[in-house]
Length: 368
Ligand SMILES: C[S@@+](CC[C@H](N)C(=O)[O-])C[C@H]1O[C@@H](n2cnc3c(N)ncnc32)[C@H](O)[C@@H]1O
Image (cartoon, rainbow, N blue to C red; front, side, top):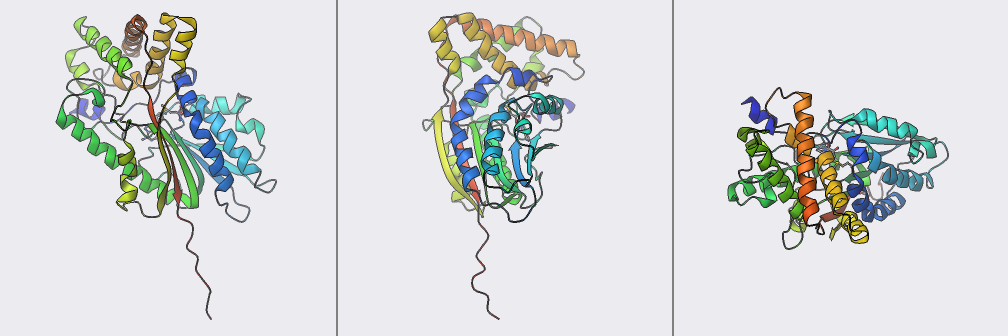
């Protein structure tokens, strides 16, 4: 039973700033969403008065990839605000996220909005975004990059892979699809409460192509094969490997749109949605330098920083820090070696979504 409860939730990204130093893929593929955020910062209605304007960064991790979007948001909002009006940037993530790395970065990096705007203030919330985490009607602008593909829980073990998109088991796929639909609805309902009238939320997340392709094929094959090798060698027990699952999903355009078309999230409009293929800079670099070892190492590092911490949670309870580190090292090395054998372009289907909270209803002419 206790092992089952470990299955139930994702781990945060690799700690001690590990995600900050190994998340260039996420940063570069999110850049097509930045003009949408900038547009939203220009257009979003601002509350009258002197109160702080709140910008929320949902799923911030250690903050490296939040620097650019938050700087853009703060700069654009500042152009519309009176001098001295505060902008409050709230970074949110799971409670066990490495928030120390986030604040260290915000306080020291020249690209930090705290270095660029004396009226900007940073704070953080360590609580799942599948709950309401900010007060009603408080958020003017939201940003959520590479985060809402993480489910609130792993609904069932995956019998034949670590990623459900590559499972051939229909019941497993159905359980993940149901969880993905529930989580998306819950996420939107909470954001609906938090957004001010007219407030905007810009989301960049994993998706599936219109043909239903989740992508990342070579990477996930390398991951699953590396894991099976560790089982064969006795480094990982079969029961441990059987529990290991990455609770992420790529949703289709129709799945993203469903709560809006069904009317389940009244007061929230789907202002924009596009599915696109993320630019694979690692592949482009390989084409330029022919360095297959670097190609394999960079994709393996991407996996180490983002999903290997979640798989390592399914090592038996009480696994020492040394065993966890050894598991991550062996998985990373096994993936890097496999990926170096036949470098190929990685398909990365992504979605950019902009949602807008309804503006306050016009009360109309008042009669005495
Ligand atoms: C891949 S990182 C993305 C970080 C950053 N936004 C970026 O663009 O690189 C995903 C983040 O989402 C967070 N996350 C996953 N599930 C979450 C949840 N239920 N509530 C809040 N944050 C969550 C993870 O802890 C992680 O820090």
